[in-house]
Image (cartoon, rainbow, N blue to C red; front, side, top):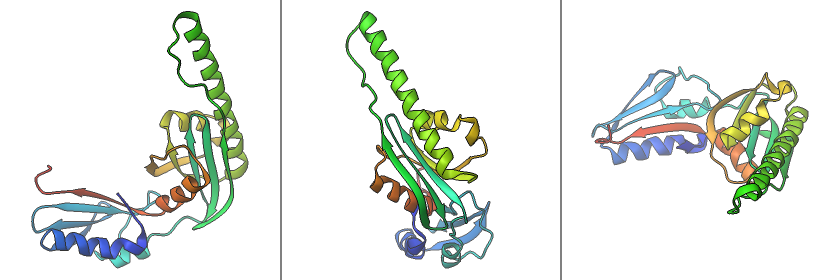
Length: 201
């Protein structure tokens, strides 16, 4: 789950209440917690950063800092969104949609013709997304991505984007729109928490 920095302290307090208290520690670059009932959590910083501060959720929250330059790339078949950011401030961005033929129930040559058309439309959509990504991201290296993994991989296959490093979290977004892009930026800046409840191991 993704938890914004402003809610981290309350989240840990709630975990402690639900699980009979919590022992906090720092391990493997994360703030970890072990509840009295055997449940555990590991809270990690965004942007693949490693946490090595005190075992204190407030300190972890203070360490949630976005890079000076980073980007967001969201791609689904027929739609994309790309943005360049400085810290938590969004700079240039672009949201675009392209029509991609849906699947058809027709058989034989008609099905093959529709499949070729759909593939061509998807390729054109990915090429358009790559052009905007090259223009907007520039030399930005750290990117948080989301949508369809194969679609994102198609866009990042452009040689001009070979310097881009996609970092966690992966964002499972719907078709990119402006509101989806803004939500993705917020999610990218949140801490990632993995919880294992007692009895789930």
